[in-house]
Image (cartoon, rainbow, N blue to C red; front, side, top):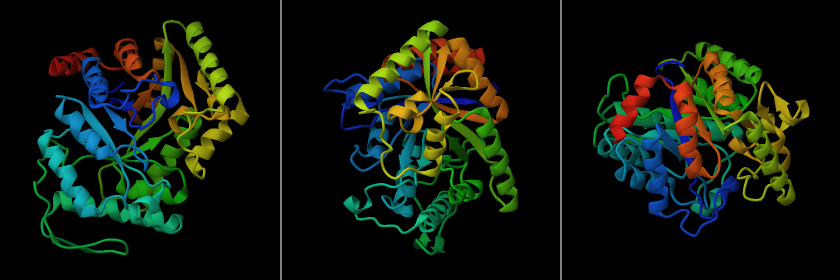
Length: 368
């Protein structure tokens, strides 16, 4: 894989234990437990981790700030929602954390439906929702890169706004990257013009190839004025010592899911978005697609990254991930449960097959 390929994990940010088959312990969401995940990521070669968002979870930005303070190289990919945040407030908070962490902040913009009324937000139809998201991303980027910003849009307004502290350029990185998902036409138009990284769920190679081609074409058609859009994959990776052991464990997990209709697995039970529907429809093509993309979890409650799994030995999964990389994927957000033990297993067995040794050695030295 290329030198600029990045590998992140997922840290469960949930009030209830047992998310997607994780260990059920009282301290699952304590600062010490979450810190143990973040420090394990540093020690086992990962760049950082996605922290999910949604009303009913602990506040994602607060968790990210706490973990950043307790680590040295860990980079949180902080999921946030326009509407939960106002652009200037968010731009200031993120700039502050980026300053204090010396450039370790990444942002995942989420536009999917949430319990908006619970925190006093409201939004209209899909066009309104994505119009607001587009405006939010454009304005926050301006607040990070310009001073004395005046902006009057359909959804947000600021006048004479200068965010402090000012973001420090770090090589080509002028500000935290915006990661963004969504498969609808409205979402893709936002991504093609405003995102830095488009995240895909675990679709087969042909689906990812088709979406990359369409987004690249859209970027040209819509006159994107940012650096070229990059692409990422968010997927479950079930890795074991042998191919046979991996498939036996995968099938056993799905059997348990079937008994409880996926209780604890599906955090996407709100109205099904276009991207989630694409994943659920894959099961009609077969339980296993490409070489080892397992679609059966989606039949029994797996949602989001839990809908499809790459299953196999470290060699099997590495070969599959390299095929995605050959399509243009340079950001990978992987996970499996139990989360902590899999951070270590996949960091030690999978990442060395994907990351050049010089880069891996450098990361481990920085975190020592």
